Length: 480
Image 1 (cartoon, rainbow, N blue to C red):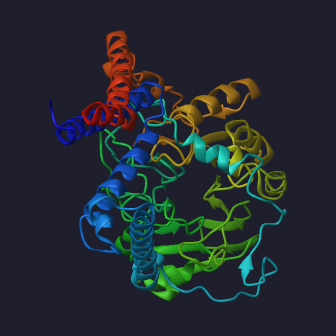
Image 2: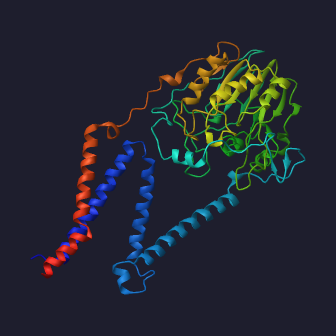
Image 3: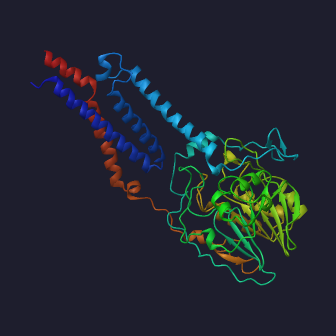
């Protein structure tokens, strides 16, 4: 008769094989039900289990000989807690090192003589929270992914080619997200420049930009006279862009000057503004810094720089750039004081119920354009990063549909397309021609589904046969 020890090894192996087969089948089930982000959690848990197993084979936390052969629950708990503590320490030290030494964080803003600055921070004009939704609900939403948040293919774009402009003409180019180039025959303005293929977050795990048919680099642009910044979040204020555009004049909110100076921009080239502060920048251009309902911060300290929107009057043209922000009654105030505008570049993207107070929904974007008395609306803050749960093309589609319903002229240029204001403005629904996401065979094939459920059934049998109870019965039979 076979010795129970060898049988116990075989049944243990069978149980382990069954568990691995079940885990693989279950991960496939999650993948087929758009829950594959949960699989990352399983991968992390497996890594923890591998580390725990490796450490358990050492003498660490061993108090008796049996603990080395078969680690007790107390020893396993000590190993797990030590690994977690080590990882948390590494993350914490890395974050502190980054915030202390990385240039990306920028300068140290001071305190400001502004009615909007008190208790060591700037505040919105209207008291606001974050949103009406649940952060827990939104967080759970990130555990699902039906493939709609990312384009299924390279996004079509147009190679940037500046126009030869005559007096009175104004051209506009959108490079994705909130980066806008405005040109006349004698001046160039650049709003919230974020170029290149870097993540929107300074750390390696930040969202990567979508892939465009054409890439856009700062060196491809004409000389930039003025750079406008709406606020200091990483997807609007990019250190590398600021350094490259070192000879430009910077028009920024209060506090952002500290970042620009830290990155090498001469103090005399940086012009700071409080809300509703006006200035003549040149004979042909005047600006007003107008409020938005948002927040700021690049490091630990939040809201120590101001955020806002810009009203720009260039020759005979009136432009509005929203930056980021939730919908508020301030749009009507701005429209009454400084409108009408020939075109408004208004945020439409990265919205969610959990942060509805600081990011607008598409319907609110159209309403804001009406409040501002804008003749045309160009929706921005989309088509480059995934920072929310909505589909990548949802902002453009919903703003276009709502604009048609509300009789608002919504212009939707292709990425990199340059067009003249008030002359043949683009209305092409180009995003509808991007190939629709087609799930891979593993998600949709019925035969794969049958194999998956069969594997689950087989794995359950293997786990049962390899469980402790059959081994006990085998031991009793051997003893009899």
